[in-house]
Length: 138
Image 1 (cartoon, rainbow, N blue to C red):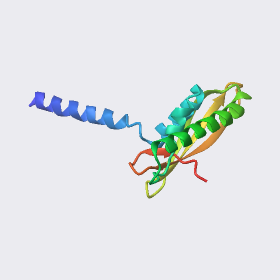
Image 2 (image 1 turned 45 degrees about the vertical axis):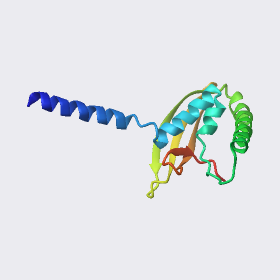
Image 3 (image 1 turned 30 degrees about the horizontal axis):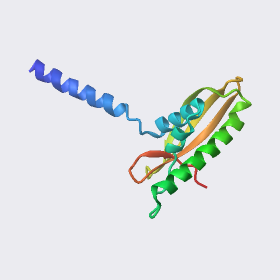
Image 4 (image 1 turned 90 degrees about the vertical axis):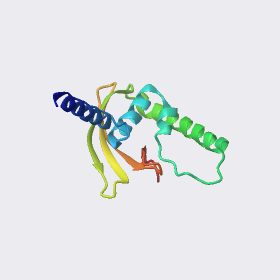
């Protein structure tokens, strides 16, 4: 009986650990997006952006749009964070998921290299596959 109990307990703990390590929560995606900017990984950042699947678009069109977005992000982020010596650290302050579970807002605090602090609301939405993505829509 003790052996069975330990096995069940082990499986329970493993399940808990695996579900708590889910990298697809609004907070995890928001943190990952800031980490990408911090490292200058703009392709990684763009991969986190919500994009509606559009019929009839070929892989080249999609890749061209992605590269354009990467270049735009790099330019924008460089201008924004260069003056403040980049992002030194960041932390999620709160996460609010809408009642329908399709959108969320994560409040992030960032400490810049020059010591200044900024707080941003990062908007997210679920894509067709149920993954949280950055919502930079108009």
